[in-house]
Image 1: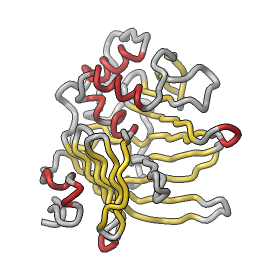
Image 2: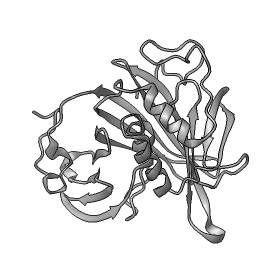
Image 3: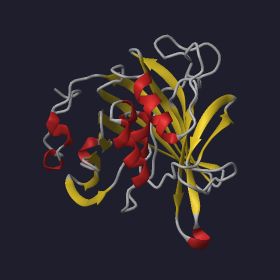
Length: 272
């Protein structure tokens, strides 16, 4: 799941072993919603968010857990590998543990804040909404009005709405006009109403740039659509890729898993 630690610990995105994976093309996979018989007319961001919520009403997963295999592409051509273990509770909670667990390091997103840990100790807390958590999970369970307010907090200009094409499919784009690759914006597959791209502005002045996060390889995990590969680009160059393994949905979690004070002691479902 792409995140940016404000203390510079990590920059990332959301998503499995790639053999046999593919982006939505051709016949849909079983369990993944197909386009409706009649095309739904969507002409603004509010209608899109409402339709996303209604399309999957009562059908979204409550929890998600997976092993994330990371590759960071360095400017000198090297590939640096790492692994994280992640636990998500919908809406709005995400626990990222940097492996090996003995390091005691990671990030916890909960209640609109990001808590950073090193060596088992919390070293930083910042207000932060995780855009991929919001747009790949929370949007399908939260009231549309709440999602729209959080999009405003993320700096997405909802008045900018258009249709476009992406990977050969029709998409809705919110937050940017055609050709604008710097403004905060999200791209949603128009038929299946699933996020395929998130662009976020970074820096200021002459150093202004953007981070382009692309989601693909959606798979049917026990009847739920889950993106299993995410790649982050900067200046047209891939800088970070995530591939998910051992993806599980609706595994019961202890509520303490998302309590900052219980970072070291909360029981995990895979270690009981």
